[in-house]
Amino acid sequence: MSDQNEPQQPKEPESGAEQTPASAAVPAQSGKKAERPSPRPDVSYTPVSNGMDYLVSVFQHLTEGEKPPGARDLKYAVLHLQAATEVLLKARLSHEHFSLIFQNPAEATHETWESGKFKSCGTLDAYDRLRGIARLALDDDSRKRIKELGESRNALQHYGLTHNAYAIESRAVKVLDFLLTFINRHLIPGLDGAEAQDVERTMQAFRLQLKGIETLVKQRMNALQSDLAKVTDVTVQCPDCEQWALVTGNGEKGLTCLFCDQDWRDPDFTATNYVWIVLGLDDSPQDGGDPSVVDCPECQEPALVPTAVTAASRPGTSPLCFSCGATFENLIDCEGGCGTVLDIAPDGESIPMCRNCIDIRYARF
Ligand SMILES: [Zn+2]
Ligand SMILES: [Zn+2]
Ligand SMILES: [Zn+2]
Image (tube, rainbow, N blue to C red; front, side):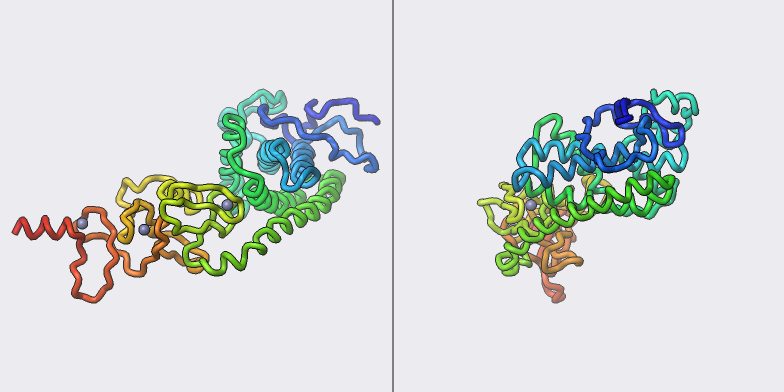
């Protein structure tokens, strides 16, 4: 074997400096297959092959151990998936211009880039720059998943695993799917012949492995179909696993996702998480927007999501109470301006105000 050098060793100028995140764990090295005749001595460990190696590790951890994967495998699957995403996005960004990898591109010099001693941008910055500067067609859904992946990784490092095996698997499938498309569409075209061939060969194995994991997820979902078919009007997407398997309407008993078994307990806690994570309503609507979780006119719990999307209503919305499971067709805001939401048919007879506001108004006059 001619490759004496360790992977982290520098660097061919052509492919960017060591912008590998310092915090990223070292991936398993089995990606270098013995039968592959190395077209050139492996003195360089380019960002792309580095990223591919992380992916090899992700697939190993998700597919080679017990089913579903145990805690240790899940941990490395998440860490290495995050590292792969970061490295591969930045590899493409460096094809655009090396300065774009710097946290502050205005401070970039060729010298610091070659030295590798600079603060590089975050994964989401890389995503946004690829979209905004390199003008790649990248969508909001993938951005959201990459953001969540970064959060999972951080949570993992501080608190250990916060999601269970089914949830991690189900989410990883979507990020992997994004990455394989990204590599194919945006990365391979910019590689030189030998490296492109290398990457393409590994990609074939990845596609097969991804199919395998997707099949497991599908089989588990299929097994739930007969149960879920009866409750489509009160079923929403689970914030943890993203499957349409979170059934609402259990009142005090709380909610459990049928797919990932995540126990969501409190309906109002679940509703809040749902609007943050699934609907992406990050900011509380202080500046005039409609509140994303309100008191339910039916059960009075603060667990009504006016813009919920149910398995029955999708892609449209259907106001749904996560506690009592009531859905509403005629939700209006109380015209007294108190923020209460009312369920009043537009028959022209009912006063579009809540009890309180009616009392106040009639007391005044
Ligand atoms: Zn779930
Ligand atoms: Zn309710
Ligand atoms: Zn009112």
